[in-house]
Image 1: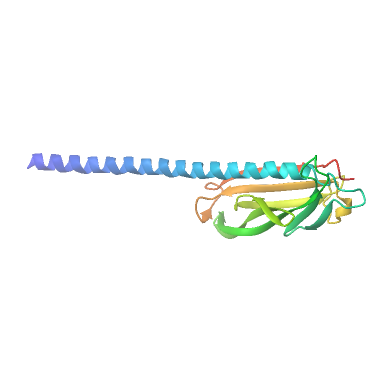
Image 2: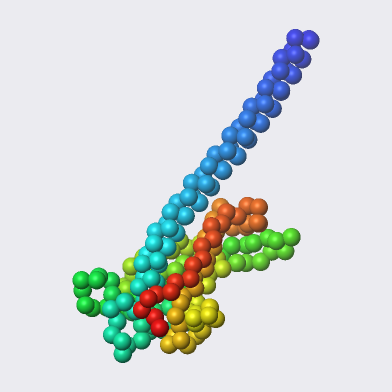
Length: 195
């Protein structure tokens, strides 16, 4: 009888250890998958930022002096400007960055839940889609500024463009500061072609 109890106890302890090891393995796997997806989102964001760098550094390039480099701006939806895409070509194009709410995520802070919008920024050249950001940008700001850094809605007064956003990888529909993975990006552009 003692022999059966010893084997039963060994089986129970072995089963417990097995489930603990499986749990540790699953946690490690989930963590690796989340990191892989976050790295892919950061790579996509970097490609988008490279495009943004090229465009915003050249706002107004090749545009005749009598023509305003900015076409339109709305803090809630878009920024449109003119620039030359190719130094060898004398024509210029209209480039529009348009942002829309692509998704949302529940954010829990000190037990209080709120829905946060997640944005996608699309790049259009002469009205044709030509690139986009990941659909997981939060706290998006794209703001023309005056020389002293004051935000302005009067495009003729703008000498700089301030951009800021956070890339958020949630991994699920509900996140907290502890579970959210973020990458912050901010820059002020001072294109040589603006006054």
